[in-house]
Image (cartoon, rainbow, N blue to C red):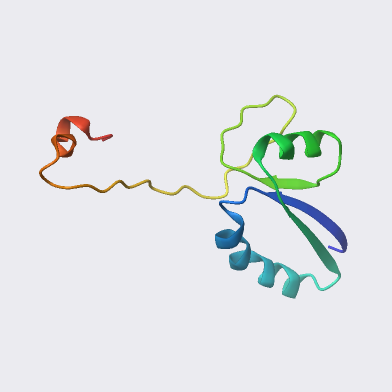
Length: 95
């Protein structure tokens, strides 16, 4: 791969996800340049449609007909609270 990859990513993922793959991607493909743009999802979809971005990383599913999605990872969601809270009851569990 060579040339420029214009990548959009939502601000909540950028600082955590980009350092995990950008260095290896650039080491494996030294002729590749990556232009990263932190962008909210609605603007990312618009930029993809206008060909202003080549790819985007967002929380999915977006389920938009003209946007092709591929899951990159799944992350569990955890909540915390006091054991004495009425919401600590198993009946409020998502399981």
